[in-house]
Picture 1 (cartoon, one colour):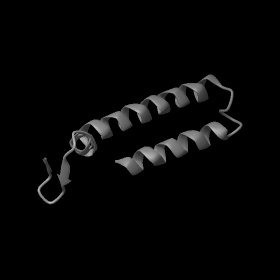
Picture 2 (picture 1 turned 180 degrees about the vertical axis):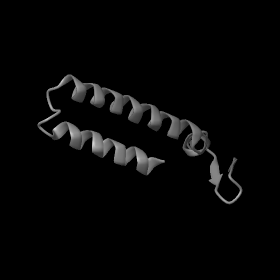
Picture 3 (picture 1 turned 60 degrees about the vertical axis):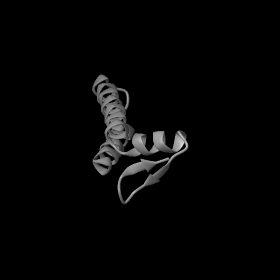
Picture 4 (picture 1 turned 60 degrees about the horizontal axis):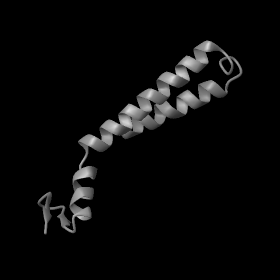
Length: 73
């Protein structure tokens, strides 16, 4: 999933660097949609991944046990 987001971002930037779409309304619309999709995708990635769970565990002084996928205090 993460690689799809990175590839989409690179394609968006490369398309906008081309002279054909640089100063057109279509290019600006594509950039806006690309940035919105990228931002929402990253937010969903962090919300639904274990990153936030592990971070909360460590912030509360616990230790994350990756073999059991739980926080130990």
